[in-house]
Length: 141
Length: 141
Length: 141
Length: 141
Image (cartoon, rainbow over all chains, first blue to last red; front, side, top):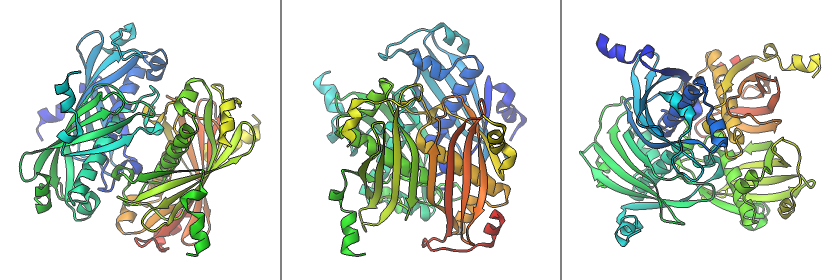
């Protein structure tokens, strides 16, 4: 692996990173983390990022401001297994006042392998599923 | 909604369909089904489709033939809520002897609304994560 | 197994029963359904029972009447595996106007084996976690 | 709360403890952690405890030595909510060469409140679900 590639997956290249360890109940019959669980890791990282920016997802939800995912694209490169430790890196792409996207990569600690790359598109909507602007979201840029 | 559109989401236009009902533990703080859970619905539908074609996912896994998802794209249109009943439709796209894709749509019963559209790319790999051909997969076309 | 025992696990001996099929994502590294998932089956059965009695769990929750589980006891007899179909039977035990218990058994279809026996104690509480009586709960007896 | 009670829930009174933070996808419609999720926390703590003692749960499973849960009793005292941090404490009770029990308590950081108390009974069985002794388990005492 070249120095350039390594640089790409360094933690300092992300707006936010979070450390994790695989839990055995997240693994399936194949002995690997089930595909759906990566979305759990990605979501938890996004919510921790929001919290670090002073935005509480549950609190926003109680105010009927829902940051919802409108589209995900996930490329699964190699699977995580029992006992693996890893981190999720997050970068921001702002598209409008009520829409944006997160680029999120999952990297395994022991070999710096990319586990998956994801793009998660979101929108801010109210309880009637209509777009809503809330000034706090400006903090997402 | 026009007759044409309705035709597109008719069950008979899919190679396989499966009926579901939302379970409350699948809903999150926002009162809607959590994003990751749709991947559970999609996976269960694929495995039931494979079983209907005589392919047992767990049995294949024990023989070290693993059908793994390499990429998912999911467009979330409208969320499912508590007590909703819905069905998942599945269509096939074969790309090579060891790769393919499923088109999967989730449709709510009460209003025929599209909940999400997904494309799930898969590959057949062995226990060393290398591509492997198994004749049973030919049944996927 | 004697005729008497068989009689005990007949569906007609329960106030409510619900049919299920194991989904592969519910199975773990050991190839069997993960222990926590049985609680999902039990909860979904309870909520479907409540709905059949005209009680909507999500709707009650929105009114700040929360039926919460205060204690579970689960005896795991034999594990469910991929593709198993089974049913959950539910019986009621009323203890007071704001407390009760469900007896719930999980039975596998193919051999009528008891998968697990559970007692689930519940209480009715408000948003401050204080006991609250709601007349609808009288329907639980 | 008396000094005595506080002493009971001090980390040093347990054979093993593990720190956690609630993830939002673990919360349900009621805005609290779903009952089944506490079993995930308890299981992950047990597996980390085993690993700390040099026992790898997944590795044991591959050798057809399965440590299975035969019975759980969980008393739910107060629910965890979004953003709560907490720890799980574990104590051991050995019953025989192939059976034992874990006492596990979940304690919230911010107020030292007991979230739940659990007793988890286990047995060591082989792939035919028959009791099996493995010397490594002696390390559990």
